[in-house]
Image (cartoon, rainbow, N blue to C red; front, side, top):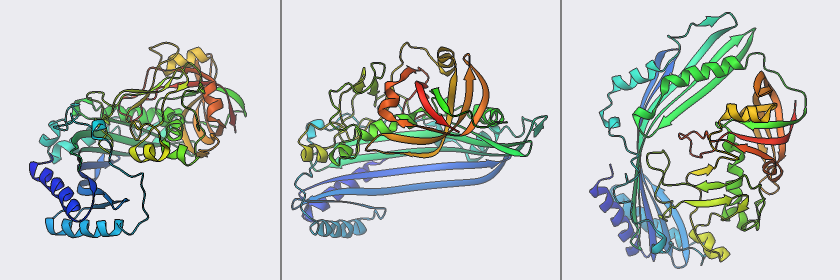
Length: 446
């Protein structure tokens, strides 16, 4: 964990910055450590151990601003680094809008870094042999025959890893907040061959606690996803009801969050300009930020400025409630600041709780279930998008056959206006808690 000696080091960095001529400064010390075991076809293929420690510092001097980082953390190197950094800042153009956040907005209750219960002491007790056994026990290569009448397993590539990430943010206004988090992850890709064609399936899981990781289930799911693609081909072009699997649904939410960033708004690079207070989405869409969920990965008490996070409604019943505004953008745009970004965005269930993907398919009747996006792009100014997709054609609420080689196109505002349902099946291992989503009359082309 971050030691008292390291905390003193960060305090010394801030003092050095003030002595070098900075009026204010913010320093962030980050530490991480990861152990990884990669497997290939049921055997250990690669073992790695990585550790990193770095300091980043934001400097305010003579009405100017600059940010710098280094991994040379001995006192002599640090003093020379900061002195050079302050000298560099004095050479850039003045920027009167740069400032530290008001101390009243900053986090003052992240004192140990584990207030959310995201650190599992089991990681420290794991041995190299136990890590290898965890990776090997998750493999389906030994438990599943290499071939079936309709397919043959070509390869299985898995990766197990466990890590710990720690950070402390301090500034010259007295802010000091810590965050610690462990993570246990497993992901696997299985490739099969059928009638001369290859198909791949991938699945993963992650948890801040070892007991929350179900690695063996990942291999089974990856194999099922690969087998389900056999015989995949495009469906006829047309307008379909689109059901987006919870694993991929964040692809349709992330552009909304980017468009609500004050950076995007200030630069006229957003399709949600002047949107706060306006009903731009259907009443069924409520998007909240829940940054302090105990025990859930990626939850956090503060953002990179040290500003305290809090539960917030981003879009409520279709009405845009806020932008994401850090201190700099608040000063520049003369609007109230909040946090720089959503920490744990979540789309709430609609029209009723308890819906999963299968229930939504039954409600929708027929259409295309999208289980993967393959490339494509979106325009941040207009909201137009075009994504390659893979998935399944479904009729009468049941999957009929796999589809691939199709494009899903449209405009985000138009797409969301056609929202039919939002599920209650978001995966807690994901950064964004986005459930299965369903939309009416979406354009697909083969």
